[in-house]
Length: 338
Image (tube, rainbow, N blue to C red; front, side, top):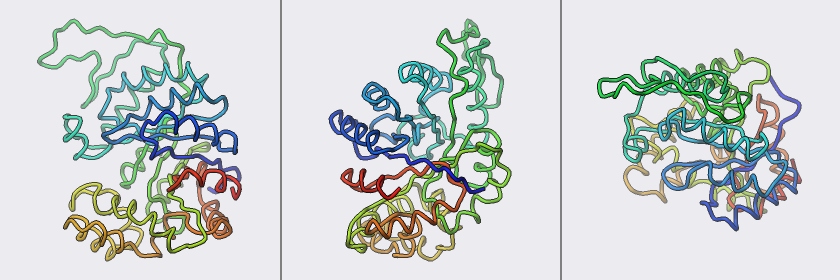
């Protein structure tokens, strides 16, 4: 399911809500031909506020969240935010959602971590109803019930409909990695937001589900990038980020990134990176990320080499490539080889 037209996106991870940096990078992205910019959130800045700011400074860029955390907001709160932002940006929002992980959901948001597949399915159903703004919001599921009718309910809740202009055509993409979650995302959403995508190994992890994807289904991975003449120095720039996800984004028993890279065929390397990272030796964990894995997951080295790498990325099912450069000085060079 290769796509002839793949758009280029820019991840704004690293701006951390710095208004001057956001303004400068967003304008440069629009001027140099990027199609979209993407914000993220974990337990620091939120994903939506920077997009509202960028919406006022740009006229063409699509504005994406990669990702906004579902457990951080009720589906109705997310709908309110998107309805408002779509109106303010004249319809440029692409909503990327993710389930996050137990450490953040329970440790920061203080809410229970639900099984992602069912939670996401119900969340999307409620969200779409709210965004359509054609009827009062009512839903009865195993996780969400609207109006709320639990044992501690007042009984005074009533079904409401948003008075905002409808935004039912908002593209909704889901960050999914586990096979069941990917299959659910293909069935229920408009696209997939993979992280640590491999242009050589994607079929083994994503292929079966993506074969069932309808026409127009979007696949928009975020890829780390470092441009420079010294390819080894560039690899060293992105190794810590790969090590962080494999070693530190979750526990030894529940880490979606480690499981994904294991499925790519790097089981031994994953075990070593996890052992070192969870043992507190982050520098050694970064050094343990082999060159082959870096080259498989990231765009690194001189521009001519990155142009060759991009040819491989273009062969897959991607619709948007979201580049996350190690330095925003690389924004224009990357656009030039694209």
